[in-house]
Image (cartoon, rainbow, N blue to C red; front, side, top):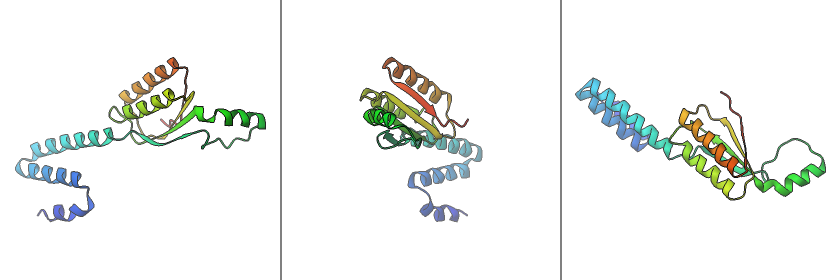
Length: 157
């Protein structure tokens, strides 16, 4: 019975539900073909969904997000005077060839707008693929060419 399919409609996003229906019908017609087709469409759906995301959860400057470290007044004055030159990006989610390019573009734009230091916090990134790593390496080279320092922190793996 396909009753579960009808009941699931209210709990699943419309595009995902259409994928489930399509895959279910294909499996009903031919199980092997349906499984391969369903997995292929699910993979494409995943890629397009994540490609639309930048991977950046939050962005700020050091003016609004400061270290909790206590510093002498002279250091605090220097930091305050240059705080807009430090841009901080908190990355989020899986970074792969589809999602990393938008994030790299946004980071590079910050450097082009006057940032002298870029901090990328990767603590909320569970995984990054080879294309993502390559994009970060290319970003590092491009920033170095512009005399912008890149600090990547929070890499857990």
